[in-house]
Length: 171
Image (cartoon, helix red, strand yellow):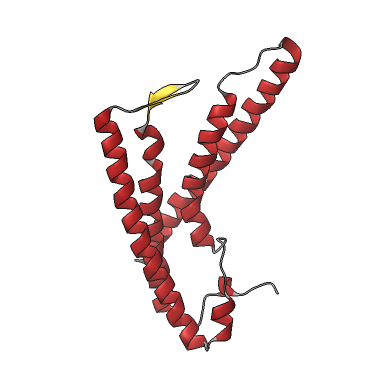
């Protein structure tokens, strides 16, 4: 299980690096658009649209990585108010809830992507493409989140019976 978790961590690292590359591309396209508009009074028509799609895709690529790093937003007030053992139990409850919610959203995401593909729905803006292309990252991200919740639960089970270290506030 540890080897699988390590491999999974490398996959998440690769997805985070992909998001960084997408961000870099967005920066380059935006700079080129501004430059072209100022020099030639005509920019890159699709730059704003692709920036919007890129923001969504970067979010979907990085959210499981952020969860693995413990860099997600946490409200740990309750964890600090209860005993270490009860805090550990709360961690289990939250991870199990996260797993179940991720699985439900993954299934729902697969359904809407398949329905969109079956209907042949299109996104029609500056760029025209099948709508399902935008929908596919959602169930993939939630599948990855579900897997990360399983690995989190495994690490919690094997570790000390206290809340995770990333559950401690800076205050």
